[in-house]
Length: 119
Image (cartoon, rainbow, N blue to C red; front, top):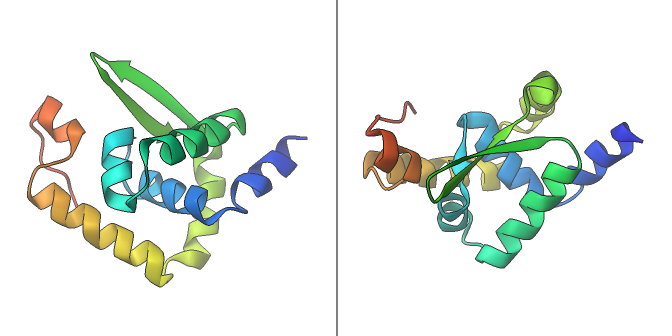
């Protein structure tokens, strides 16, 4: 059942943190998420695989980079959930970290495109 997969995906703090970052930024690569969340590559990959299999996350490849994003068909649902979690201190700390990284232009997407991340 699709609904059960989605709720199971949101039942893990690590996956919620990944989804929260992807909710606020169109796409991120695994190395950015590792750095922001202080996860190992293995842990991050495992959770991204779960999120892909649950139908919440998609990806695209560009050269050696793989960028992950929330699938269009579930964006509204994910947005509604995060509407209720927007004051969570752990999630807010993750946003602070990504703002610093973006200001230092350390995110992979900006290395490739040379764009400034809107925060």
